[in-house]
Amino acid sequence: MHLDPYRASELLLEECRMVLPGLQALFGFQLIAVFSDGFHVRLSGGEQIAHLCAMGLVLLSIALVMTPASLHRRRGPMEVSEDFVRLTARLLLLSMPSLMLAICVDVYLVTQVIVGSRGVSLGVAIATGAMFTALWFVLPRTVRL
Image (cartoon, rainbow, N blue to C red):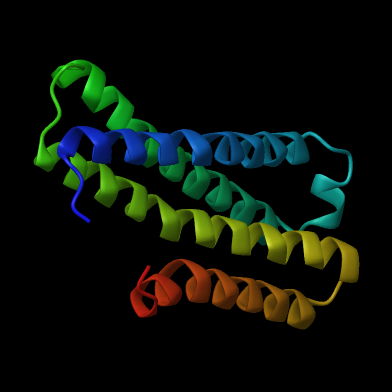
């Protein structure tokens, strides 16, 4: 079924609205972690830099997810083109790898604090990345809805 550009844009913008609160919550937890007493004690300098990188990746995802709404407001809220729909879909898809990487880094760091083993932490982070890759990138290419 082929949707008209207006309906397709509604669906894409709704997807962006659904994803954004999760991104904001994750970013909030990342900010809070820096101010906790154990952050500087339990994480090495390199791990603290990794946390900063994960924050940057979440910020990138937030910017990519919010861009379609800004474009829509600026370019004409009463106009929807197929180009807008394509760009919105691409921006939403582009936000996913950076979010996945940020989550993997955060999972590594949390596992490191809890377990204290770099090997286990790396394994859990890799397993998390594999799960997201399978669900977000492989499954959509293999399943026809």
